[in-house]
Image (cartoon, rainbow, N blue to C red):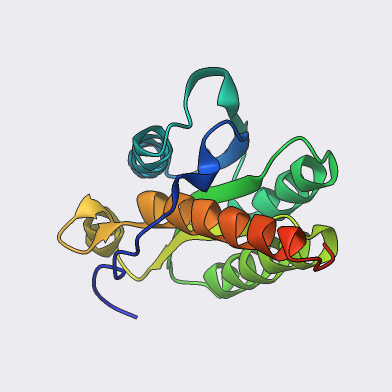
Length: 164
């Protein structure tokens, strides 16, 4: 999908809830922009300070393990994962992207805690920058907004008698 994700109205359900952001250190200058986008989105929804924990991991391959550990702790309404994988000359890109995507999805499905995918998988560094606050938006911001929206949706389901 290319382009900026559609904006959704996110209810103030995030107020008072805790969120974690897991950041891959590989391609750190770009990952930092994703983190900035995620933190800004959370702050715009009254989630900042002690309500947000930031955890750095070596790379996108390690995001799923950290996300699963944080989600299992039951301390967070959502876990936002951000990182950057840029294609090189070997198939390493494909393996890292696959592990990151499947593992992040599994962390959310296994725990019932929203775990969102803000990992840029780009063919070039230029494409990565475009998705880290450039012309195509900020995937960190989008992942944080998705976590807030899903946390609110799940809270509503529980109030209606649905199970976690």
